[in-house]
Image (cartoon, rainbow, N blue to C red; front, side, top):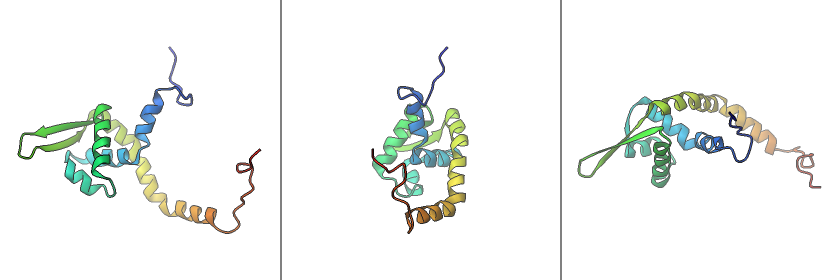
Length: 130
């Protein structure tokens, strides 16, 4: 049996990696791992996400089997999202990335300032054009 190789451009694993690497996915799975949540509450809790992006991301997570959507027959209809068992495994894998980003924010910002500051070498091997 041939194992997937994500380093190859045609590998289907890349589709899943695209989903995992999305900041909205990481944030939404983190919230949904806490408890089932309604759409509007997710929108309030995740600063900066548009209604359209939230809907698209939730739809993709549902399609991938990571999130479950449940509609209640109210007026207007109430929609609640919950994480699936498969989604829990992904949330457990990606939440350490969020925690790392929070813990190392200042160090990364300092490195960015140093990189963009005076003395930056513009003529490195990576920037030379043959």
